[in-house]
Image (cartoon, rainbow, N blue to C red; front, side, top):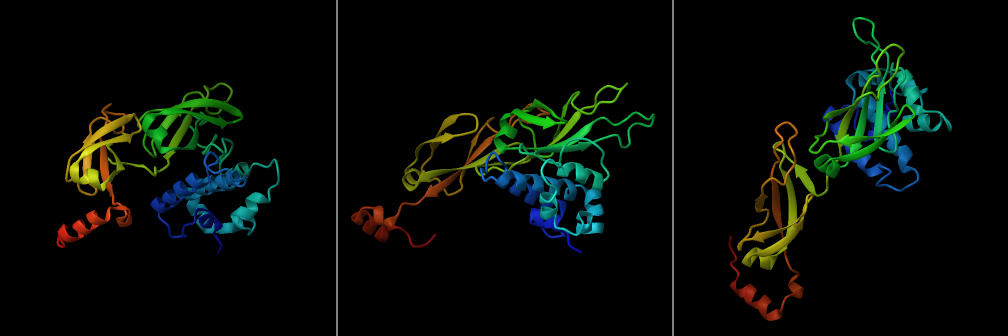
Length: 296
């Protein structure tokens, strides 16, 4: 049985939820229209978001695993999505397939997608007017906070991203859900997917870790290095005899813990850049060859 949604995310049918999420985040970063200006990137991004909305949800995934691409008339997902024609919302079709009524799309150019509707509700028959959605944000916005514009149910508005938000955490936009006569309007509940950074890591204690380059001379004899951080440019005093990957702590320049309101530390990890031997003075090279120890 063919199951092309797994191919869309580049994972095997036996992939764990962790592997599926990791693949999604990598592809979302690669094809996000803000970062990839290829004309086809936006459509690819939408397909990636749609695939993750299904495979990232245990119930929908189980439904898809049972039927495979027969749900798409035997076509692979890409051909099925492209064959719907202009003006047809692939998200509406997928919602019908997977038992969802109404709500927002599975994905768009902003990395935003969601679903909601009247299924379930309260024991007293009140409709469930909340909409659940996903939003992909970059690492820097997660650390510093910011504002993102989203579009849902033909309405466009800005939402505030709190400083220090973590991957998988949720924010609520009051009164931005669905409407029903005689009931207060529901909320938009957004789960944030934070893209990985090429420059920083964030640990469980809200510390940030960043590598910085220093020349061999500074590692040997010490010196000062200017380093650009997320918050500001700092000058770090590097002691003599600094080792490769040696860490230097800068207090309260990490991520904000939203519960304790305390900020973690920034750990700067030294990366020693060795000079090319051909660029050194010949007499110096000769002396180094003679004087440097041969054993560790």
